[in-house]
Image (cartoon, rainbow, N blue to C red; front, side):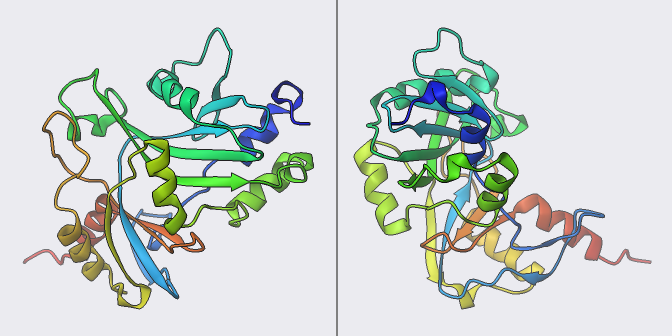
Length: 258
């Protein structure tokens, strides 16, 4: 039987984190510029808006309890008297966690919390520091949780970063979100992966055409979007394309006039 109070929280934290997302073009760690090659999507690809907030998670557990966390740490467990107030994550997501039904396994809802005072981009979504929004972008359904929870943290981390988490595919995610009453990050287009541009300049043009402004603005604000996330429908391949990365790279490619 699962008992949240008997499980090492370090294991649960690592097991339910969102993995790192690589950039669509290779990011040069020396200068932050983008270079070849581009990520290959053998099948179809779905583009969604990358919302500039804070990565958050609601973790539903087999014993009927839940956890709320940021990207890096767990902030609250059901029944706690005091929760970590970081970025307003617990305050905003606890009502959602309370109404989501637990199942037999571990299910993790990954959401982007934005607006309010969440980072420097909050003003792109709202002019009211008390106004928050959240969008679901992925769900993990871990039915066979017993073995992973017996592993040491380094093994869990390696498994997670290698794509070991069982993702809910797109055709199941859409009705799951609807049933839970959660809005997804905006879907921009669905096309063959072979149609994605291989060149940096062409991907920047596609970004600009796909998302001239954010689609999730609050109280009438429609500011600058951060970028897009590209996913295979089954989540076997995932990459991100951010405006600032492409703009930084293209500025370096411009030859100064003499």
